Every structure is written in structure tokens, then in C-alpha cells.
Length: 113
Length: 114
Image: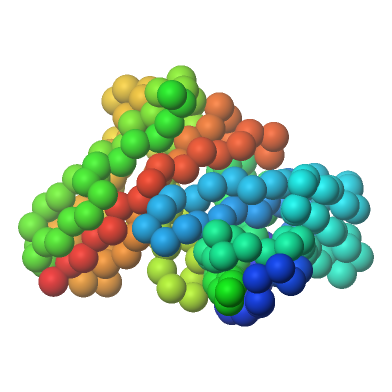
């Protein structure tokens, strides 16, 4: 079945770039998402990419998709302390039309001043 | 303001005491879903509903019930809560279940079962 994997923790200094990585297994066309969860808050959709695209840029965020390796990354340029949060990679499950999002474990991003 | 609301936001209860977590959306969405979030596991789907009176099990439905009597509401019911249901719960909604439909999430309900 579908599976999404992420590393659990990343620490960067303020002003550096952060790169959060994710791998997925579904080989069919789908949407891939990045969500941000700040402490005590719900999930905020940051950006998404369709699986036939290679890259998407939105201000400080760049999403790169390597379809051959089923590897997705989120790059945050000029990382700020306000970017400290848990970041979830997710893919939309295509089988069974359940509407289910399959989430990775979440990567905790720590930004040091 | 378009939103998904959940109540309560925090709940501490004891084993076996029935509880209901409410979820409501004001976007006229047909599709609604419940997830639970546990450390190191991400979010897993508990139940989902394609429309009024249409519900189905997700990946981890044991110990939970849902109902969808109205389009806007999708309550999660724990008939006899147990400590392994201590978790952070999220409700989500979207226009449909297809891959083109963005899901909107509620703020979460943190449940502790003693």
C-alpha cells in the first residue's frame, strides 16, 4: 500500500535554508502536499504539487519532486524563528476513492537564533 | 469566515465514560474525515463520510463511531474510551474525495483518557 516517510528532526540557524525531505511509494498520479503544524495549532496547508511537475516555487518555499526516486523536498529559504514547527508531507490516496491523505511522521524543524 | 471547528479543544476523561467530539464546517463540503495524530506516526484516518448518511471506516476505526445526519456536522463518538485512545484528533473537510480537492483541517482536540 501507499506509504510516506520523513526524517523526524531538523535543526538550522536563523537565515539559513532548511530542506525537509520525504519519500512516498504510490506510483500513480496524485497530489503531494506540505502541511505546517505550529505548537498547539491545527494543520495549515503550505503548498502542494501535482505528481507530473518537477518544481513549484512560492515566495520562500520551493518544492522539488523527483518522480523516479519518489522523493519530495521542501526548501525554506532564509529560515526564520517563526518557521519552527512540525512539517508534514502527505499524498492523496488514489485507491478506493476514500479521500484519505497519507501522512508522513512529521519533521520537527527547530530554528536557532 | 470559512472554517472547520471542533469542540472541545481539550478533554481529560476516564476509561469507559462515553464522549463525543463535535466537528462542524461552514463551507457546504460533502466530504468529511477524522484523523488521529500520534508521535512518530503522523496522522491516520479513523472514519470518513462522502455525504449525509454515508460513512465508512478508515485505517484505525476500532473503538470509534461517527454519524452524518447533517451535511455540516460529523461528530466522533467514543462509546467506551480507553487509554490507547489518548491522542490529538483532527477533523477535515473538502468538497469531494477526489485528488483535486483540498482538505481543510480543524484546530484539533487533545484527548487524554486516564
